[in-house]
Length: 143
Image (cartoon, rainbow, N blue to C red; front, side, top):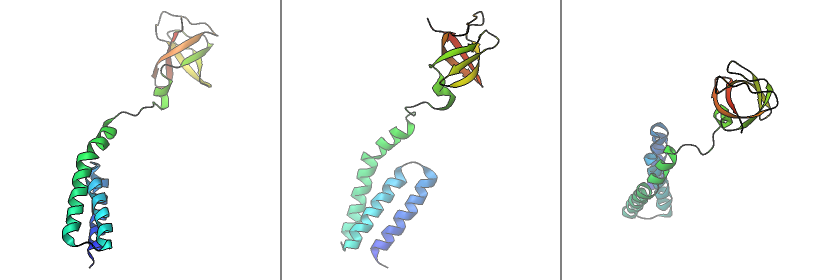
């Protein structure tokens, strides 16, 4: 069996292992094996193939893995879903009290309650969304 096929099988096995571990290490080593398969297909001797594999694996693990792990642990830059509504402004369509009301947030009408239960916010007022509890926006009047 040609050595490039062995390297290709090793790259595929390591790629599958990466899918199960999600550590980025197996993926980097898999890419190193894929690179070595290309070098082996050119016809370099097994000693140089092993050297290419070791250098590519070591360089990837030392250089790329810390970067990949930093990106995996980093929180997403954009909020989405209902958490994206927090901080937005809204327009009061039905008077909002500590017990209920309605506001329009970005074109959608939401049930709402005043963040401060003693407040009564009239129709037409602009409010800020402080929190979302289930399907209810907790709002406070804009100064």
